[in-house]
Image (tube, rainbow, N blue to C red; front, side):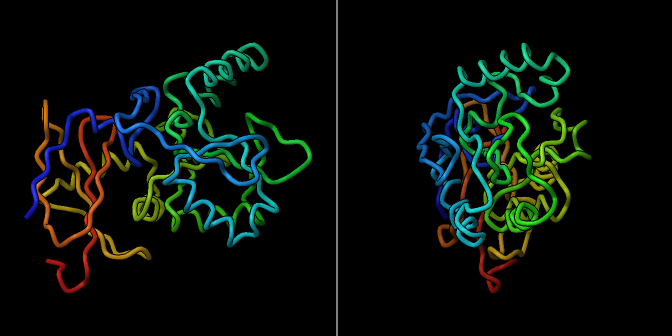
Length: 256
């Protein structure tokens, strides 16, 4: 067995951090490694761990010939400018529905990207990404590369953001598959995992990416002690709320 001490500040880092009006983004204690997304409208940046699977998916779909990257990582200053400009140009109701508050935007994490069907003119705030053709094919394949459509129409009352079919969030594997299979948005998934505490009742999922045990570990006031099986590979993400999500990969023969 291996024991690790997780500093409290790490609950604010990782692929599964929940960022919304209730849980603002805090600058990651690990820093951000941003890389350019291929063939964006301008220079579109994404966290390196999200950019690679996106490129693999886009290679399957024709290497960006029909889809354009509209917006990826944004600084808080840029988000503030977008918010202020939208208030001026579109009014309060539109802005509150489609533009996240500065400090509360997933774009600040580097894990979110807005996409559009490639055309000569693209709306930066509400790009066209229909449920047909190449865009729908992207949407269907996205979970197997770690991406989910973040703001579906039916969950606007939960996310606090109106329907945005163009906005995709990287949460990693197998989480995107689980969320899609159960019809959960990230707010619901974070709550769902609290029923599967680490070391007690992990959620076991067999997906395309393998057999995984997913569990929630509440954060201690200071360091949180994590004890793991040294023979298993695992990943750790904060949830930006109150704890960690531990994902342990297993082979079939060692499943309990």
